[in-house]
Amino acid sequence: MELTRPIIADTDYLSDFLAGTTPAKKTTFKLIKEEMFVITTTITVSELYYGKYRRKWQERRSKILEELIISLTVLPFTIEHAKEYGKIRASLVDNGMDIGFADTAIASIAIIEDLPLLTANVDHFNRVDGLKIRIYK
Image 1: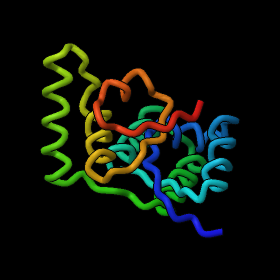
Image 2 (image 1 turned 135 degrees about the horizontal axis):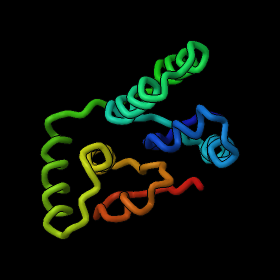
Image 3 (image 1 turned 90 degrees about the vertical axis):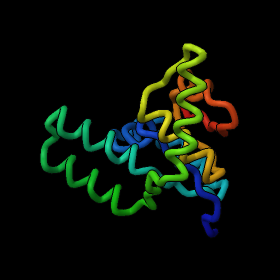
Image 4 (image 1 turned 60 degrees about the horizontal axis):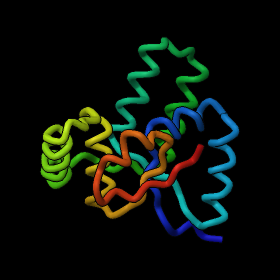
């Protein structure tokens, strides 16, 4: 079986994957059966490193994070994504539904790349028009 379809993983999924939670494990197996593979964004990688330093992870857990990041395709935040980010964020703020920089940036990458976003953060991401969401919890 060849994994042929990418899905962008949000920070909550990758954090749960690193922690070995049951929902993340089950979702990983489902994705493999559907021939999907997980990729992520530089924004998510930034959030993972923030969590590592904020919680002062031990060497073993830090090494697992490094191995995970190296194993993934990581999409950069480009000027095209930044333009989409500006459009999305302005609309959300104008409508009193701001979701912050990181989630808006992740959503903009998913929209421009026309890829689904794997997340449990339905409250935030449901606010973004045109975003394809896959819920894992």
